[in-house]
Image (cartoon, rainbow, N blue to C red; front, side, top):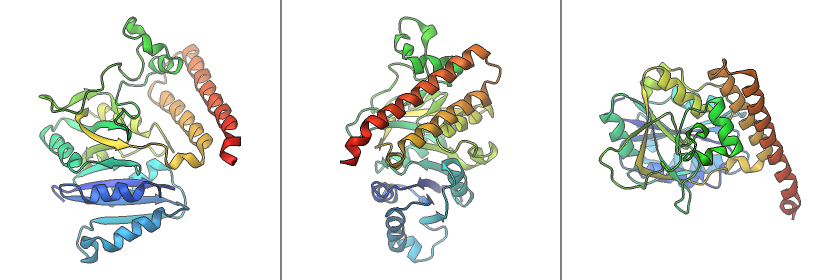
Length: 308
């Protein structure tokens, strides 16, 4: 369906934010359809979605396409698989993948849609992502995470990039623009923050959707890479801003999430840079293991406080 934007939200134990996330999207300017794919939440997430499903005017009139759709999985399929599941039933010609702990402004999606419609070379578009205090939340404009760049970021050497360019890491230093009007609203980048990603449905299906081999984390980097490999461009609209709390679903099982992230990054490196030398691969592997070990140590130290 032309001029319809389908917003796909994958939820998992998201009761703290899913209601506000949905309310913001459903109240946004523009023609939107919202598809929630729930990965077996054991909290109040489904109840909050169903409450809005029952009271949505478009749904109560049995309009087609429905303003709000819900897919409730009886097991956790993983984030990438659930995204593909939502995209398979989407009616829009543009897809938006939005985290359940991300909140759009009233005009965020409409402005991004306008940019995408005006730039046919764009295959994927992201935006500025901030936390509740207005500070940048996570990487904003990413470089391709090669083995070398990842090593620079893992070791912290990337902070000296301004003096020694060879130490460049994944995220360019000093490139997060203020959320103001810009003469040129889009910067071309290798990858964007995965809290919100907008792309034409034809591009998403042409590249095969998300790689479901990534259960959690790095699937956004992989999608950006395959969009670029297919000949489209990835853009970052720094003048458009959303708020992202981050980590809401992962707080229940932080070590499992860190383990998934470690495995996904290693899978990404092997998939996209199989020619890397053995020594570089070994050093990066050691860096990932050390980061995982630090996460385990931090969790063990915090455990007595969590039990109080």
